[in-house]
Length: 185
Length: 185
Image (cartoon, rainbow over all chains, first blue to last red; front, side, top):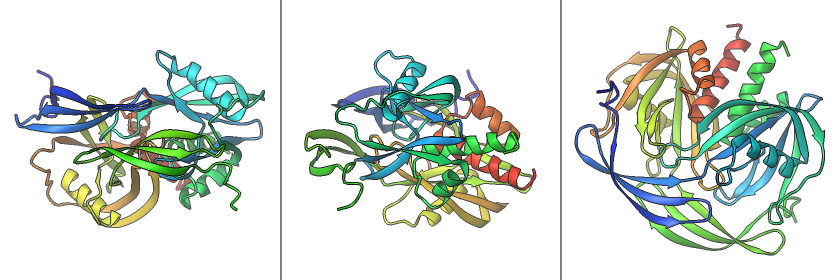
């Protein structure tokens, strides 16, 4: 018996409500630690990657794109969904090149996190990419975005005044600010 | 004509697939900037709050709880959904007290961000709370979690080794690390 048994929910069944192109909605019945039953609305997602790409002149590449869910333009680190069976690093390299036109010589995994664990299983793998070389932007036919080059100071200000309002981007910008302070920048 | 017209999607209609207790799933038809049509799967969520609560001995309060969507225990900053019409700061105070048993004398809004803008409209309002006083934990009858007290060094290590794997928590911990370095800690 694990010492987490007082926290764990046991799944009793799962009903698929909708299978979409990107997400699947299920409603799951669970048994709570106190023996009672509850329903959980769970969105299944294939997972995603995002990239903090740092240029030779110490700026990061951000993309400004319209997001239908919040119904607004959002400024974010380049990102994309994992394709079926795809290795996250391969996906990160593909997304950076498609969205910004850059390839990177050095890649490092920073961390991976769930974005909305209260209702979705989306896990985002976060990378930092340096040694950038411009090749060619290869947006999907139906993908529309602008690429921005942003300094550390500007990125922090954009978080504090609300122009950057995306969780993964806030996490990666503060990771970068912390790294830069550690390096004495 | 705005200079963002080359990015904006226009909503043509929205079909409600499922209305749950927490989320509503819609499928929306949009017109892309190139005139083509596309479908967007959009999860509607009431929004949420989260709190970086810093104790007098410079530790943060985190909660370890089971999350059915990722199907695992997650260590997170205290958080909760907005109730209908509720002011986010009121919600943040309620969630901190319910989940950890602490009240705070000083509250500051840090930033607000979308967690999964690719498919959901969940917006989380982030606060830092100091001047903590222990009152009494008031968990909902069907809520189960453990409260942890964690130093800055331990929190960073937990992100890097994967024990903290939640986007809002990663963002807030790095915000805190940055603030502490700025203060010379």
